[in-house]
Amino acid sequence: MKNFTIIVLLAALGLGYYAWRSSTPSGYVFRPYESATLRDGSALRDEAQRKKIEVELGQFQASLGALTKPEDLTRKLNTLSVIAEYQQMIGKYADAKKTMETALDIQTDAPRLQAYAQLLFTMGAREGALPYIDAAIRLAPETAEFWRLKLDMLAEIHKSDLTQLDRYYEEAIEKSDNHIDIITMYAAILARQGRKEDATKYWKLAQEVLPSRQSLYQQEIDMLKS
Image 1 (cartoon, helix red, strand yellow):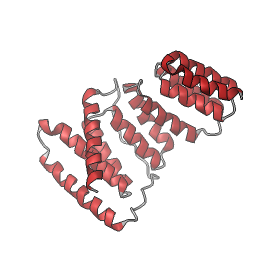
Image 2 (cartoon, one colour):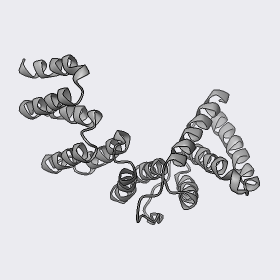
Image 3 (cartoon, one colour):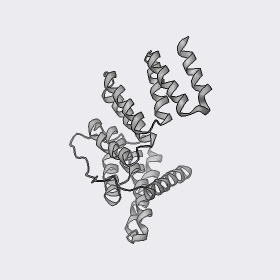
């Protein structure tokens, strides 16, 4: 448990660093998502582990009261991130949502918007999560992780509409300035769908974007010929 706590704290510190480097999307004002149909998570079955998490959660929540000075802002945001993580671990999604909203009201940045969108999607707000991941993408369009989350969401929402999904992937590739991760992800999906000609097109694009891996991508192209 101690090791896990350290990992969560390090993740929160990384989030705080990212937030420090970011700025709010131009013209974007965060507003919490409201719905009466959001579902909460399941309680953690391991009672001993749940109690340990609840104790540590309480400690972090108690520490917020002392973080009132301007110089405490980064630490406060990091603490809120840890609290939200712990709340999700024990199935308290509604509480985690409120905690994230508190942090986003203090500072709206791309990784917090991404985390909020992911939580909303998990809680059943599939369409409702999209505006928040879109806001994260507007802030950092070159970040493949944000595009991957959006594409995963859209793939679940429009899983029977391949034409629509194609448009989303093509948009992601264009707006991410040909990010290699998105290109190869799309090429692999096309290959799994049996669309060999389209898959080959994007593996070749991957070769152009990242020549150092040309031979690796050529292997993918050759497998499509077999």
